[in-house]
Length: 84
Image (cartoon, rainbow, N blue to C red; front, top):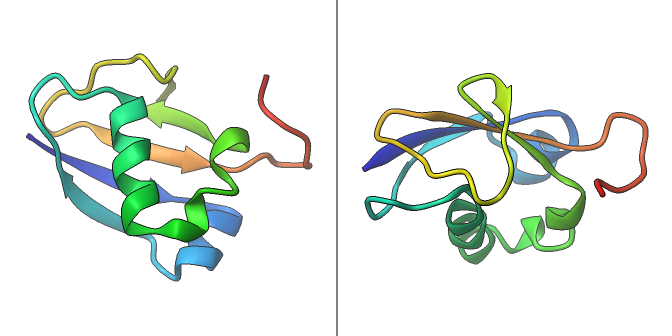
């Protein structure tokens, strides 16, 4: 399946890109996607714990199962801190 990943704010700046298309196995979760992205973009590893994710414009947890054609947004903290 294919998903579109959009990067915002400091993530966009660090990766020097706005978005990408990502191919994943059927049944992949947000967690699986983040694993995949951290392998391809090591700069994400340090940011991963503080990044929020949204799937199709709704916040989603790491165990959210993705579907073909989903849009996943990676959103850094707005004013610092860490996602709990």
